[in-house]
Picture (cartoon, rainbow, N blue to C red):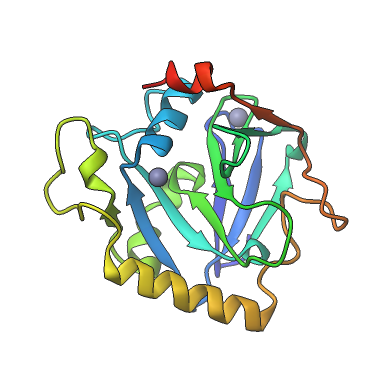
Length: 199
Ligand SMILES: [Zn+2]
Ligand SMILES: [Zn+2]
């Protein structure tokens, strides 16, 4: 593990990887939207959602994330046929990352829960405080310090990250797709009924 990367590890330790921690535009967000909360409920871990039902992600480029052990544990689900790809570890249902299908989008929403606990303090140092967004969907009302919808700051930072990623080829290699664009796990897509049951 080099000094300029953060270790990634699922809760049981079977799936491991690394996030390159070099300086470039990235954003760190905490999302309170209905879909992210439903995903946390579906995973069934009580340590994924915060007290207000939010989950934290670091938005980065796929090329910045590597999986180094336990890749056979990777699973993929979608809340609906057109929903985000939501990747998790099948061994212990730790969320890994959210993202799009194969293509040139230099975007991956890496779940902070997948960052090894001893490395999480470095998230503050590297990425700054998380922007809370979509607070209007939190069950108890918008939590203190959280933006009701998306914040201008996070949109601006995410746009900068995407533009630089397109220029730099940050979409590849992708840790979760084969070079031919095939996902490394078969997607489980929830039915409308199963999705509704998570509310
Ligand atoms: Zn695990
Ligand atoms: Zn969300």
